[in-house]
Figure 1 (cartoon, rainbow, N blue to C red):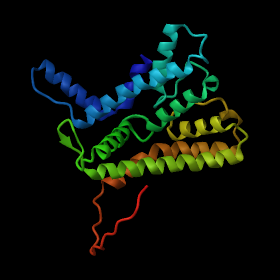
Figure 2: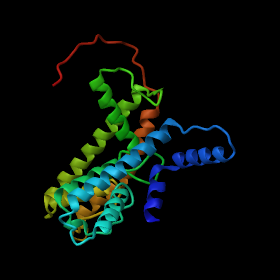
Figure 3: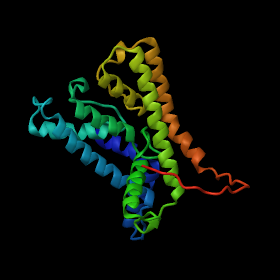
Length: 253
């Protein structure tokens, strides 16, 4: 039940309304299709849950060998679901292996869906980044999914969001690493957890200094407001220059 509530809160109100309309139309024998947004959110969420659970099971078996097979499977799915938004934990996070902590940090960095209760850069951003990479290797200019072309401005906004979000994570991590006495992994995990507004911890939160706790508090506010703020800025009309300058190629790679 807890996992179901986390998923419903994480996929966002737009998707919930869209799914409700789809179910209602089915019983009324009317035709209704899910929007592209809902399809991307649902597919990305399901893939992240199963991928996260599978990797958690593989990485965490040695450290959680006191759990039975069924308990390990349930724990893997529960932590995969809760790591992106809610922050509940049924095992001691501080006893997990380094690959498992890195996995949880990735899930916290992604977060939930736009319009939901989760933080992170959102699953839509991850989907667009993945589609952009595929389009790059296929050498296609237009990015099409489910018969719909996605405006390229969206991809620019997504990469800007991910870059600023990651840069802020690194700045906070560097400051915490300088002023705190914790280990590298513990402080890095604490940083991603705070900015992702998740709340998981390896156990060092009570031992942080006053300045460290202030940084964590700031991180939680910024992590919750930054994606929304950048989305609002990116949705505004682009200012067109009155003068067009000549283009010149530069070398990449």
